[in-house]
Figure 1 (cartoon, one colour):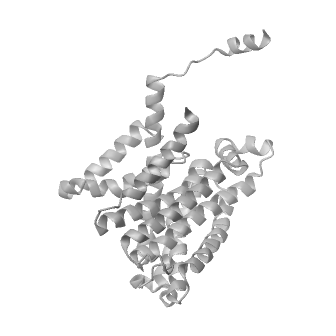
Figure 2: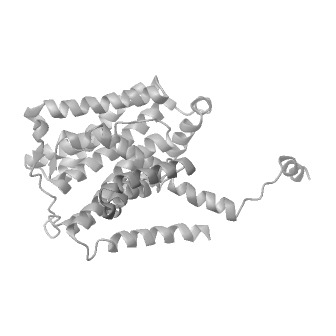
Length: 326
């Protein structure tokens, strides 16, 4: 049953994503597109934090690198398809460099290092006006045009983003199911034991940061044509914390956690706007309650319900040993 249930669920989710924007206004389609883009950014952080166990508060800075690289090149006349890969390569290289402190410091010390890096990127974007436009930012970035398929309107751009998200998800699925994915999990659980078993923890740590950074850069490359205006404040520390919240709320270390977490962080405030000025208070209270009672995230709720109504049979260790001897 489990073999066909998961593919069926994936098909249903994809079908829901395809029909969700139909008949909706531009703002709803824009919100759904933002959900897809931040899901990509959260996927990258989920690999670094959830699978590899490396704390990072700099995901928004990689969104900034991808966004500004793509924006500058497209404004210079490059097509988005050519500009985006260069932004991803730059994010990969910078992610490798950021991964080096993780080889020496752990825990909250690593969090402070990545936090400082995010602040550094923000200051560079704000002060180097000759390149980034400073506080005024960059405006007028074109959306990709593929001849017969133009993404100038909101709905086509949503489907374009959905296609990129599906491809990024398939790549991530392959990564976490590969030997690299098992090495990431081993690094998270016990680095010393992983190294004793032959895992090159140095290389795996650097890869966790580099690949996660590429996903942040891809999200930034998509946010550029979506809003067609970027400025340093869009990639501050607060936005890195927001992406971290998506991972934690959805369920760190679970493949579908970033999608659920991004959906809550992006869409729940919109659904609570009927409460006028109280929606942020209600939203914050709901998140706090969830993190207190379900620290493993929304996906953890399903696991808890399954254990409650269908508890696993526990076999005593001595009974298992006796069964083998017989």
